[in-house]
Amino acid sequence: MRIRPATAAELPALQDVERAAGAPFRDLGMPEIADDEPPALDVLERYRGAGRCWVAVDERDHPVAYLVAEPVDGALHIEQVSVHPCAARRGVGRALLAYAADRAREAGLTALTLTTFTEVPWNAPYYTRLGFRTLGEADLTPGLREIRAAEARHGLDRWPRVCMRAPL
Image (cartoon, rainbow, N blue to C red; front, side, top):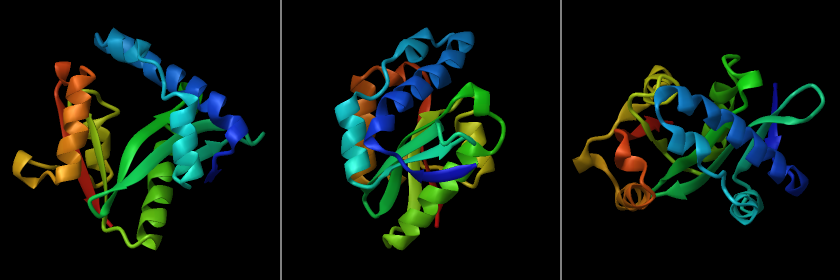
């Protein structure tokens, strides 16, 4: 599995990956998540243009997963990591997170952070296995508080969510 920066031409394929990766949420009683539209092309382009949109590609150099991130309060915040079901359970998400961690270290950042659902097996339980720890309310930085507030406005707090951090 090769990981590299996404190209502008691949951004629609990332939306397809996102839609496919969201489909399993339907089986968990979360159809709103399954039906949620992926990030718009201009949003993906902002991450790509900033050098923070990476893809995992198959043997044909076609994206099967992607990760977008941004610096937040001294950490690299994982805004989205999505793996197409055809590539799931092969370490692709783990590899993308390791790649992001390397880029974060190069930039002098001290941790990876993310927000995620607590009761989705491939969310908080998965990230815990990768070394992320749940942050309590008192441990949230101002930027993470803003992110959580935006998620609440988007309706994501309908299901239990947490912020998590992995030191680098």
